[in-house]
Length: 197
Length: 356
Image (cartoon, rainbow over all chains, first blue to last red; front, top):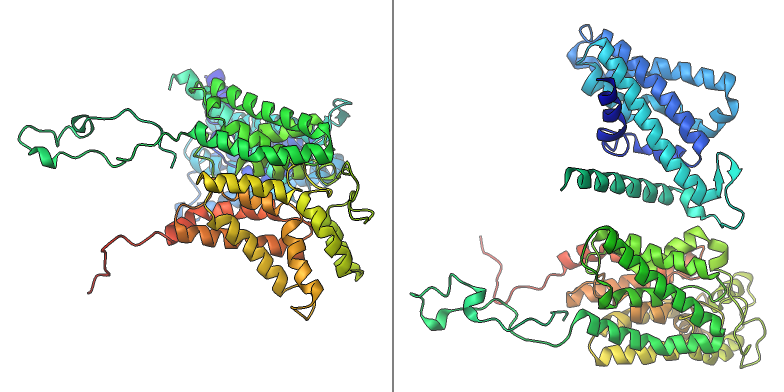
């Protein structure tokens, strides 16, 4: 069951590449692998914790005000992340900037709360949060590796190749769109090929 | 215009229901295109390639053999990319229609002769791989691939794309410095610091017409581009409306808003001529705004499209940060083509407005 869930989170229902959720922060932070990974970890933490709490409270939260309730729970964990980042990873915090507080409105987290955690038991929601966070992080890492190498000729901050001239456009917004579109298209193409479509 | 040669069909093949034995022979109908033409996509593209050859020759004369090398690399990269994409997608190979060759040529014409060879290869690969093939290949791309390649290079390597080499002959009319900056950049600088002298620019007009000025490989020689344009017009591959209205709009706008109060003085007349001859206007108007895939098919739509290109070019040149705006204005107008076509659809013959 676990391996099935992991496959679901990373491949079948990958938040960025298949569900196309959370594209805005993905575009903004996938300019370098450090940022991408940091963002992925932060979102995974928030996603997992909020999934658990929302799942615990799913019978208590009234139907009509569920979205504000979810947001309050998510915002709590985002605040924790923000304070931890400020205390222990000030450089990363500076890099991610506004996109850390914006995790509150990240579609992946709200989407999983609405579609999964509010309908499933605590354990399943915990696993869902973990695998979805993993899928989000992996997708961000793929995007940011491509963008960092092509856009600034670096990998994890180290110079990649002495002869390659980086293409500035890849660390700008258009490059982000190109990269997401191509990785998404490639994933769909391979998926179709596997299914024999 | 691009009807491929089709085997002659018997009426009964085309519409089996009409060939019912009870139908009188006179009422058996064939499907619509009755005119047979020998024109095919590769035939048209071959003519476009031929029409581009004078400009290539001019580029080689003014910028040296390096221009030829870059063009060859660009064409090869375009063709190889198209081949690789169709192989990867397991589609039928389409490089025989020569459209990739045209795109490769146009990308090379849109870069300065000083860029490294791999840069132009990246531009061509982007043009074919991203702007054309991802949308379904020839006929399905919504923006001009070559211009998309140029725009990508401008965004990726802005400094290399705006560094222009000197021409082989220096300046024919004795003005120094024509060779390093493009004429439009000089014009903009002269206008900005008030050192504009109509006479200097009048002397430059002949150089501009021949192409002995700094710029991209294929854009400088208005003469060579005009020769190609006449060939394409004669073969009816491009419509006259688009280049005429495009260049005319730029001429008119730069004459009216020439920065001086007068409109009949020498400098007021020279400015619009300078504006249409400098930069990539002729290349864009003749070869890229007329792209069959990305320009409107309705007669009125073509005028709207070309006038829009002209107005945008003028606005970017006069008020924008870039000295040249032809490529961006054509790309922007490409996006409006579906809208333009929808709003300029010709009235159906005999149709009257319904009276309620």
